[in-house]
Image: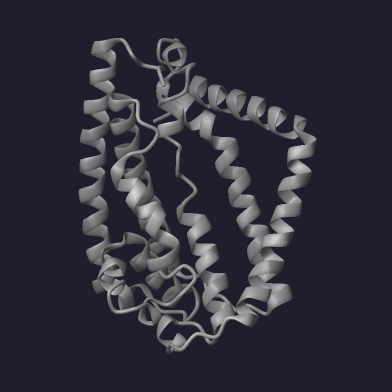
Length: 267
């Protein structure tokens, strides 16, 4: 439970980050230009690519809807990416760690503006998809649970990354490195897993984002209820809980090792 003082701390950090964000006007303009171009390129890409696969099995009527819903789900579940690792690996972390303010309030405050901004952008993108591309989406309990489960899984992976990188001072950790370099090809973000070559399909089956996108499309695209995806969801929840335990233990190991060596804040 965050106290009243903690809420003030969160608001102060969010305000500072918001002011710094909008002070970089050129970067902001480029971000909006990039956003517009990405949306345009997605529409063109979907029109040019022909996929020899049964798209309807993924809960979408056509490849364009498949691509757009996958983009929305991906943007939402990756909101917490870097929230822990970038926080504890920063050079000012030792100062924040020893400040009188609640560390939890500082953590939330440091990440609040970035997450709120990206969440707002995702909402804008979704509205553009609906009004300009004719995308039809559903929002029910199944969609909410899938997204929250995906967010927890990405947070757990980031905990593991933070622990590994604090201890080793490496720029990457092997687990997230592997998932990141294979995600675009095998997870189903751009191409249906059933359209992949046979030798890549086993890799798709062990990638966690494959199941997040699959259930996200079935619920958001086809309107599947929570009960209809429950067997697959329970498997993903079990993986998520296991990864949370592994991520937490890895984080404690890395954090305690860095404290003992006096290397907190060293990169």
